[in-house]
Image (cartoon, rainbow, N blue to C red; front, side, top):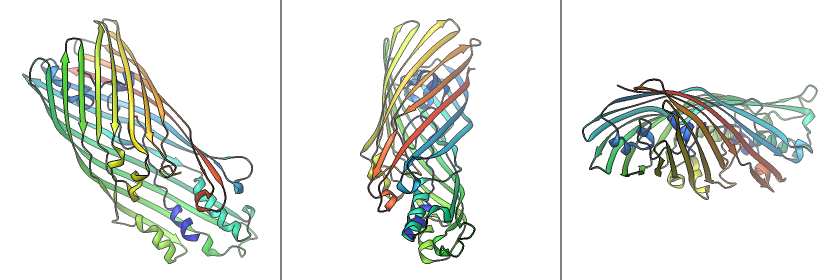
Length: 438
């Protein structure tokens, strides 16, 4: 039992997905996504990410886009466990990304278009859990209860800050084969940088110092940075027939191993604790693959001033390696369904809105206090404002409504007692960007 507690105490590796997309992928790398969502058939500068083959139908010239997004997310666990009392105990974490920049550029000359981008392609925030997590509290309380001790005799104090960024530098070339077909080939260099800093302390209350064996009072200080990199090959095609436009893209799976750069201290010193901390020792490598992604979008010009797009994404999560082969616990891959429309309300103003539904292949064995996902739907709206013939301003607001995930167990966190966790999330993003054609 003590070994289980100590293993849990160092498993506070917070999975941060601040933006839309799959478990490890951000799909909103341009503000146009926030305001319309379904951009997979775009023939504009945001197509550098969403539809790179469509760049073949741009007018000739050089295009540059600068974007900034600000996101705020909460993660809440309402835990029901006999030792917590009759009411659920609430644990809340916050994840913030005050400024997430991205840059896209493209140069069209004849049948060729060369493009590149730099963006945060995964993660993109910092999560803070100031009051610990139920998996820690329940395990320690369960152990001490078996020894005849109650919660008035000791105090559990734990907290952790986690941050995760995947920076992506993408380069590629688009070739317009004929009047209706364009193709793309390129790649993205991904650099992963994560950091986790926190502690777990269990102390005896005044008057009970001699009642609780010191071996039951773990004290851990953890400061762990993780880095890794991998390359994503990307191919795409775009078919434009009159008012219809079909955009296709496939991003291959990216093999990534992240390496620990760790400082830590712990007590008491015993083999169980040392074994539990091995995954986080300095120099240890952990798989953190980025799953393959298939996108398909069909756009239609309903009127000269009104356009609509439907789109589908599949993230092949079950093929992407995770720590301890966690991907095998998924019931299936991630599927996203998107729809969006934009209307030229004025010769200088285009308004737009969109909807996205995300279904993960979740299971109880995949979900944990330290890393959980929830099926969701997202809504985005905004406008594109032509400030001049060459300069356009994009502004948008995007929010996500998550479906609570309930995980019940007769052996809550490995203890011989029932328990239940209800996982909840919120997400709000504001974006502002400019597009310029030289």
